[in-house]
Length: 347
Image (cartoon, rainbow, N blue to C red; front, top):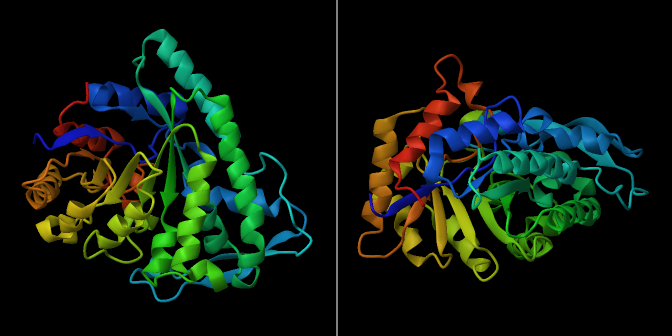
């Protein structure tokens, strides 16, 4: 497994708080880990779910029924709350969205653990944040999306700029979570007007990446993880490679999913031969906790990359904060982290 080096944490970890998340990740992954997340614990454990309460706390923004997606392969994605935004809402209060406050609070824990020797001095603190596109397209009614997108995006970029300003660049890694964009490009989700255009999606990602200027930044490309199921099953990684390459000059790493069924075929990973981003993480750690399936996924990716000098870190397909959604037979966080050690250490 010389091709497989290091472990990448996507974001969420099933832990009671940031300190517990960082401690368990370090204790199990040890020298395999180059960056640690705060686990996105508490109100953040449902990814963008907490943004509904944040937004509806603003006068002129309210829930008004439900909205339906196009025709996803997964019926779990068929309907979600619909938020309506009054035209008078042209700006959101600074730090309303909560991402800067959460990152700064967790970074203080990170620093304390590092000072105590519980974390190594060269370990980075990774902040994983959803793109503005995610919350606007997922939650806002289609009639308001085009008008509200720049309002929400400006607020989100201020959050990220605050994070970059508060945490030393030598300690920080920013990861933009890109899932709803993939859903729209695959026809599994609907976006209004220009928001549905490929060029708009690419331009919005350019703006997001620029907001994290001066620090290590990357993309987590995702086919959805609601109840640990994709909104549509990827046949291969061609779309992910195309999206990553469009931003290759401005990102430092990219994470891509490995579907536990289609990802067992080397052809699934063939598009990676054309990937222009140097640092790659693949979601080859099986969410159901099977060591055999994890090794099969790693083997298929390695076979597809024979004859190249491409290496990759191992990861799950998405975060690990909701691993108990599968029921009583769900693997523990500790077991999933242990599967990451199938890769070679990074130090």
